[in-house]
Length: 439
Image (tube, rainbow, N blue to C red):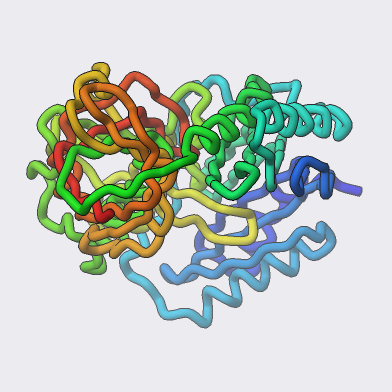
């Protein structure tokens, strides 16, 4: 049987003969292993093979899409994509797929150890995760997950783009809870392009945090400095700021940042860089998922908004170049606009020692309920602690923190040295000079 990548080249011809003005082929094949944990036992271990193709066909500016994982039906899928474009309204603002350009060299996104790993080895690594969680007395794991994948993707279009790239990823997470009547919970995770995660340590950190969070105290409602650890800050950023940076939302009037390019929206020393070439980044590749070369771009530079995030379509509407932010979740869907690797930069210091009074928050719950236009949010803070005279003190039973992302960004007055990758956000702990904490 023909390889799906060989057929992908023929798919361009199939779509052209069916009447497409332009065609894009996105093809992927790979293998993954996933393992679910229930309490301290392996619940399910599964190995899967992935192979599929997505076709975007353009007719008079209208976009049609079809996908399949069945090789004999690829020609049929191409014809269906063209038919789908024909029944849609013509779009004069369509400016075309990317043209072939030189791609940057990227490093750290492929590990042969992951590509060839056996399912038995994955089970052993998951057991390390469980053993780490069990090493702390009076704490036990309640759930966990391990996954790793190796894949190759191919992007072709009728303008000469042909990009083939190999990538791998591994991740692990665990939830823990204390035993007895004084119950506290915690979770931890790690993700990497290489097989370099310390799985035992991931489990141990989750259990240590759960134990430290016992005997929580109540605090009064107040305005106080708040230190948001990487998991908490990344969660808030993704649900409040990123929608306003999406050029499609800007063009449709659904962003608070309309008309604010070159205006100050954050603290003067704060910069946010979207970097599709970041070494070993989860969003790193030589191109985005349309074939636009990856680049490093200032989104916020020294507190000023410099750029929105564009794909080909939204960039074409403004006669600009795409910023390389077209991202797909699967071959079964068309790309949307998203960050690649968002890097948070600010002069770092020992912000805990430099905080006289405040609160430090590990994670938040409910960031997805934030208003994506205004940037207003109210979230529950989990595994939070009082800071007193530069030291982390008592755990806090339960608090809510609320605010507005743009006020928050303007009030950042320090970041730590604990930089970590939280998915596609690369950030340390961030200190906000004053936030509303509801006890």
